[in-house]
Amino acid sequence: MPERQGPSARRAARRQRRPLAVLALLAAGALAAALVAVGMERGWLRSGTPNPQDPAVRVSGAIRSISGSANVRRARYDSEDGSVWVEASSRYYDPARAVEENREYLATEGRLGVQLALFDNPGLRRVTVKLYSGRTLLATVTAAQGQPFEQMKVDYSGPAARP
Image (cartoon, rainbow, N blue to C red; front, top):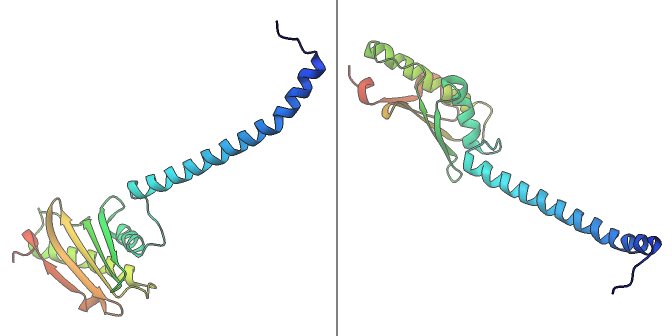
């Protein structure tokens, strides 16, 4: 039969295990915090949550302010030539309007987005915005840093290309 310990012996044994338990809890907490941080980062990358340092994210934010927050589909940055491409759904295109009127809306929407994206963003050399309605490409607006609003290139496609 095992020998029984008195209350003071049990307390002494607990005191000896306490530092190990505290260290184990601290290590488990640090490990849990690291796992949460890694999981959040991986989830952040997978979910597409914006990283404000990425030029594509900054440009897509500019486009969101013009076309609407749910309308930006994707954005891509090429660091070698300082270019950003953004694909977005047009907020102002309406198939019930006349083609000329839609072209004016698309040009203004795209040019304003590009202008805002290039403003105070000297690291960018060129911005291209592709405006869609559903899966149909309507217009592509391209501008370089310092290019005047009226000279920004607008190419129309699909129903917007028809005169």
